[in-house]
Image (tube, rainbow, N blue to C red):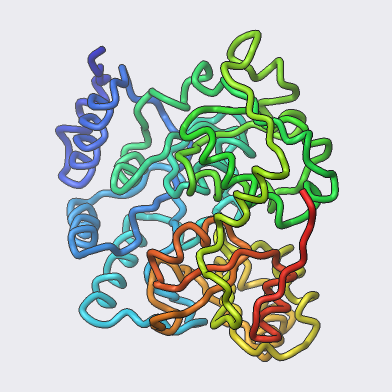
Length: 417
């Protein structure tokens, strides 16, 4: 099937340099993906503004010099620098300067200076059924699954091309027939107390991602809405351990009022019945540190911490002084609220290092330790921290992370699955 461009789209491809570059990238990508046409989009979330090398900075500056501007609302994923000045980034020159130039180029392109991996917490929440072009794996899966908007996983630098043109290739998860579930992931065999706990959802997400890969599944056996932070944690872990871009939870997510409605056929192609033993193995798999007697740091906020999660963090610390730092990664939207009533100062006085605009696994922030041990409640951090930071990881609940930071040694509370 060949791609057909409208006369307007053909004119864009032949127009001024910056927009023409974006259209040519978009059109060629659509051809490679087998899309028959381009479709209008309501918004984008840009992952390509994170500095990985000079070519990304030079590409963005080329778009700016060519007169390009985003045509739709476009928020930005994390960058390589904490522009709010909360934490010290150990990125040296010339990389630091190139990272700053990259962030500035995306500002000039008209993108919102959100710098968060959780734009849905900062007010960017596209409507149910709307087509968008989002990057960043956890944002994509949340957008598709929890909000019910439609996007594929748009990577660097197709995301900014979509933003400038205001269109995306018509393929994949933009099409309703491709959003139907083909397998069932049944958690009804797990205890209600476990499913109600915060620790459950990153573990289940990690297990789900490994079991389903990039297939579309529906989770059954969840009797009440677990809350957006739990769904955020589940999706982020699933997108990290697998290639999940969309999940459904029967009776919870908007496209799955029940199993029958969302299944692609009368029967699922596969049934995965989750057992406590499967959960125990998945939980153990999130830790890479063997028999650690001390920890060097705690990192939370991947995806970025919500206001509710900061409430929990402050309540758990209860004014105590931490023996090791807790790196709390968040967006500037949450930071603004923390500063209104002095909460940021109280948290920092306890030993919390607030990280804004970025996070500890994408840019050097934590000390460079040869045998460091990091504790986290994030399934996504657990997947990426060993390779990106050099720290071995211990996975635990937020409550156990806080107690461990206070004592300087690992503390675990068992909750039976």
